[in-house]
Length: 278
Image 1 (cartoon, helix red, strand yellow):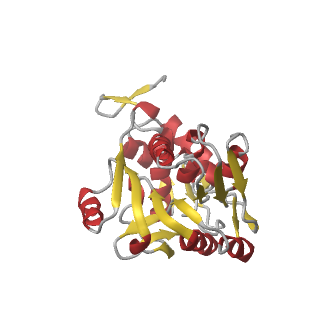
Image 2 (image 1 turned 90 degrees about the vertical axis):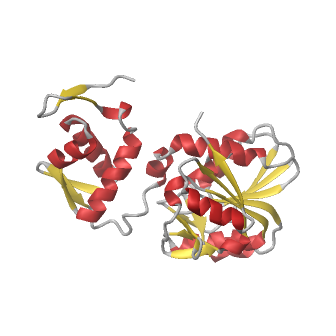
């Protein structure tokens, strides 16, 4: 990948753009700064991330296109018209930690056997499991994720069930009591669920009440619950719990998961699968 270079005030050469930090990761971190400080300047972000003004402007323009910030002279401010700035769109989230999610998806798929009935929620990490299901046979997949459902249609050995409900634009997910009532009647062998937060006391949490209710229905119908989360979700607590710790059988995550928490979960009898980037 081509990288540009620029000189700092101290005449140091700094490697710019994606070589220093993947653009998707940098944009996530910029968004976190915007949410905290409400207003950011290009010059400040340039120094913080050691990239050029041009790169920061591109990042801010991209965030504005997603409706997350509003550009101002020399910087940007938080778009306060966004109902929940912590809930990024599925297109944004799909780009974040994509290497880790791909590896998590591959390991998760290896735990799925022919003839099973499994559930995938609408998280982007659960979506990453789908490409690795092409060798499966007689598999039934229940998902409230519209993108996952469409991708699964391309796999010959998989039957797809969508629970129905209202379609959420932010997550491209189906939610509501229609889907919950269907899930109550189905026996799921393994449920693979993402989350926005994981702690010992709160368990798996998410930021949207409707998503929480649908995920609870998935968990309640599943014999085995497997969390598929990257390391940034550890130690975070969001709006509401959809899966208490005692319902978790396994967590698949990446190598940056906090060692102390991993040990605590393992001591509780939860299987922790740590994946590394290729």
